[in-house]
Image (cartoon, rainbow, N blue to C red; front, side, top):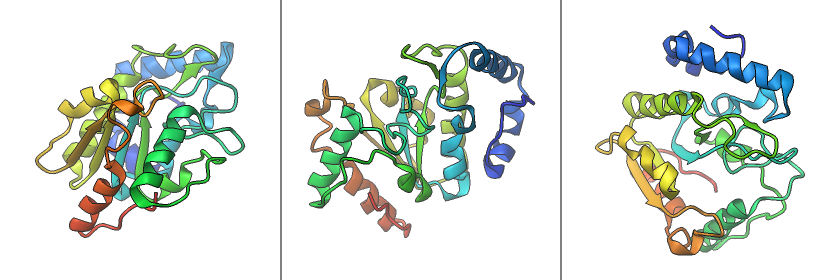
Length: 223
């Protein structure tokens, strides 16, 4: 197994076979070389942060992003989330606006750190887990998508009553990995300023997710 893989124990067990596969070893060798020779985000210790904060057995909701933010200090291992002290990006601002509308509450638009969601069971998964500085999608097509597709299918197979929030065409393409007979899949436009007004605003996903969880006897998320 690659030395790069430092991951929470329940995920380590569930993914052990995958981690020993030639394709994943090749991926981690490449990623390690990138960190040694280039500026890459997030910090190495945060690559699997989503897994550390949301163990497989505690997972309730899955939100799928594409790849990490590529600006300095932004990415910290959770999709859509930014580290403390970093101004929330436009897509996250729109997510906050939708939550405010759904629940008639006020969000703190100065904080974009979503670790509190992750600790409640919201798995904030980017399909690609690393990126070169200032080069969006620079680690696309190198193996991360195969890994995260495997993770999504594993969640679908091993758990039940999970809510999957798929925003934008990239995330919506993942629905084929999910058994919709035992999970709730909600789809909408991406919260980006370019598309939020085309179906993200007014989607009601956060309240629908909580209603579904409550209906299954599961503690809802404090968004």
